[in-house]
Image (cartoon, rainbow over all chains, first blue to last red; front, side, top):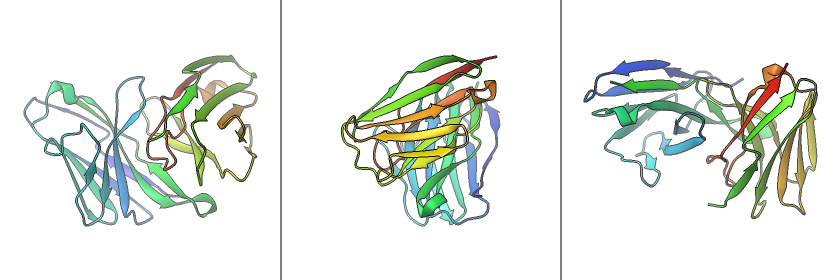
Length: 118
Length: 109
């Protein structure tokens, strides 16, 4: 089945530094990937839609200069949290759109990246 | 973006019992309806999915059903096990990229 690899699984950084999270589709090409943010015991909040070779589409309220998304190839999308601050600490999850069961498009998620900003 | 009412927000079930989670919509113009399961500290994973032209689909202990008149999708987990303890999400819109509030299920041994 489709597999999405996300790295790192956890990262601790100092306030003011930047952190990059990678999301790779291992056995399929993902034209479209999504980035989510999840706070403890809360739902998945869609941050942006990433399309290969074009600029990401950000959801309302998400700062595009703070959360830089690059989707330069059909198997890799990256999220860079720039000048991270403690309020950026969260669980970030990527997903890729894949034609899965019954020919329908399904989301395959990465394992998530827990970011802690000190 | 249509609203979804996912209920209950949390659920505690004894081992062997039936867990029922519902998602109700303003309209059900979906071409595909998935349920996702998420364990703590992990990313969600597709659990089961249904097309609206089918009223019910069963995979093992998991059954997804669609009540057209009530505009509601339901997930039934039969013979619930402690390993089923997780959060379950339904999509909040027809394009499945947005999610409902989730239901935290705890199965007590």
